[in-house]
Length: 241
Image 1 (cartoon, rainbow, N blue to C red):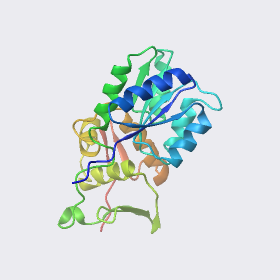
Image 2 (image 1 turned 90 degrees about the horizontal axis):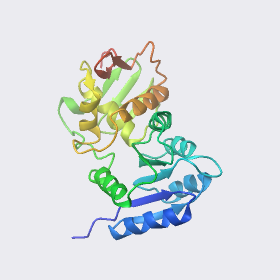
Image 3 (image 1 turned 135 degrees about the horizontal axis):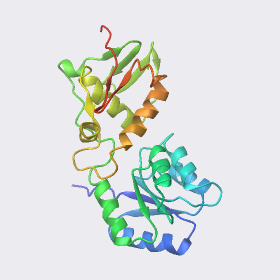
Image 4 (image 1 turned 45 degrees about the vertical axis):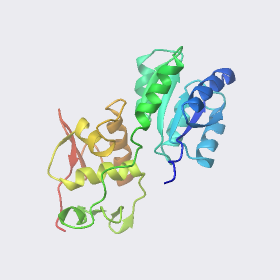
């Protein structure tokens, strides 16, 4: 039986010495590591060698870590742990709103960072429960002009395909399986990321926001994803099959 492929971590920091120290700890724990030291190089590295997780400094030359995170989320489901020298709530909020999963303030213990990396990667993103192959859960769900096919893992609006990341599809499918239900963030995290997921629960809000934009939904008058005040999210009114 072949051993599983080692997980790949992209470390992005303009402090070259620090990046190498972090890389050495990760490699000691069995990860493969790519290094980048500025914003454009980080995005290029993530495209060339898709990582499982990115350790991303906020302050970078070229363009900063927040812009790197924003661009990553257009093509990657990799976990993102942001690093900053400033313990400012606004930085954390902005980072999470752009799709970061966790936050660590410098100076930090390399062992603490490794522990967070390992915790996140125990259950890789996108490995939701097996897609059903029969029964009612395999039936495409229609919400207005939106069609979600859980077997083919496709989404379309009025017959036109919508490109979603794995996480976005899994989140949408989890809600579509029980279209009348209201889900808490924790329920959605358990369904999509798994009960052992480590990070901020508000990452759900980020992916719901991305979904709404891609589906052409309006948060103030949601037709496809509704906000349930004080609880979380659910599907909009379900049309006939």
